[in-house]
Length: 88
Image (cartoon, rainbow, N blue to C red; front, side, top):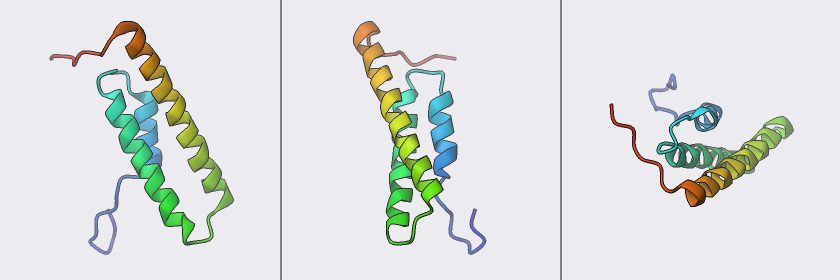
């Protein structure tokens, strides 16, 4: 939460970690999408500024990681079918 009273979007690193650590295949696509959107938004924020090389590399690595995660998910869907929602 920002000190100026304006809520900040979730941290891209936290959303990336949630996607990478997600064990429920039914929730994975949404986690990937949320993380990717946050990363792309952060990239857009840094374009107008002088981006920190280290963060730029982290953002690129995270996008590549999500791409691989999405590809693996899609391969599993092709092989085993759509995941079912877990019922409690």
